[in-house]
Image (cartoon, rainbow, N blue to C red; front, side, top):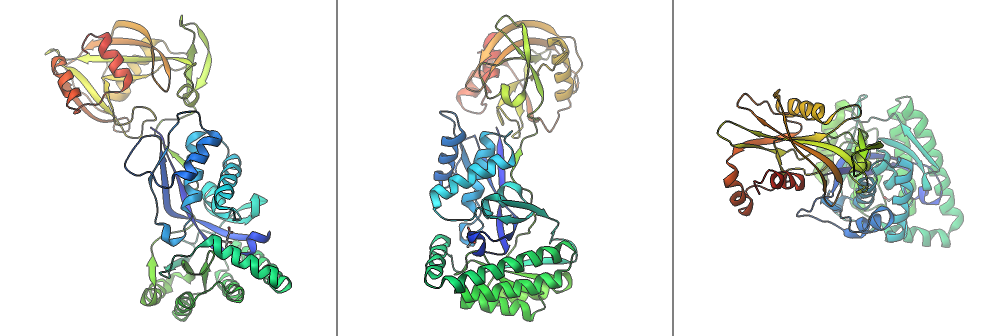
Length: 455
Ligand code: MEV
């Protein structure tokens, strides 16, 4: 199984102007959206996932969002789900490739947007951003440390970004000179804030945020509630405060000296809703304990070595037959040891396996690999008996698999990163447990048990 997550975002400065080519500053937040290739209860808005699969997927490939952060705050779940889906489809893609394809998908579906949310979901951290990724510069703005912090408040009103962006465009058509002047001045504030923030001069950044808010008010995108919360935050000691995002509702942010954090939080909570997230979070990432670049041995149907390919390629291309091993462990009562694969495995996560299984590394024999796996997974060193060599294939991969057996009664020390649980079971009881769905086997465990005449 593969799980990928991408963060949501908060606009710190430069909203709206960024749509017209001026720079903005955006930070990725601690709220993350998860996408996985295993079916589960939640599937979210499938339009973005479907578009990602259409662009980068293979036929029949499925992906699911397993969780979503609340849509009401405007944290950018559409961008995060698109970025996470593309990364799940091609974990070896560069951030630039992901950013460009995700931006195209989001623009196709939503029609408007500068792509700053896609940039935050992809690259993470805090970025100076210009539309289309013309500028994508990571800023050293960790506002969770450095003696400052960012306090976030929700106004209680869900804003419709697309319609507000269109309203602003209409205003610009009517009063082009005035609105363009606002955008240009906003762009200047953003660049001044970058210089001040890079030096750690947060007081100046706060002042520039206040100016930015005045321009947003002039644009007509602020609301009474946002103004009330901003005023309360400033009165309680914030360096600066402004709305964040399109306006018309959603969130406001306040940049505060550490010692004033509690007072500002209370002030915001007294007239709005405090939102508990942190900024400067990590960009899109794959959650698996398996190193996707590990080199496996690729062979032909007669087991002649053809070359070496990464774990990722071998697990996504059925024509790459690669060498694997399995060992069935029986105790002296003739019970078979089964183990449950951890949820972070890239294949067969959470399923039951025959005692020990793994891949043959470059320069290793089948027996050496089986001994290594047995020791790494279960802490066992024991003589092995060759059982069979077969080609095994399922929907993901094709293996040249050698199966060994061993008799063992000693101590077992499980590797928690790879194994969730183990049991000893009388082979005759296994079919009933499988039927009752108490045990769900991996496809290769099923293959092994048939070879062993247990199933
Ligand atoms: C919306 O959160 C920010 C805007 O600048 C739109 C965009 O950049 O896509 C208003």
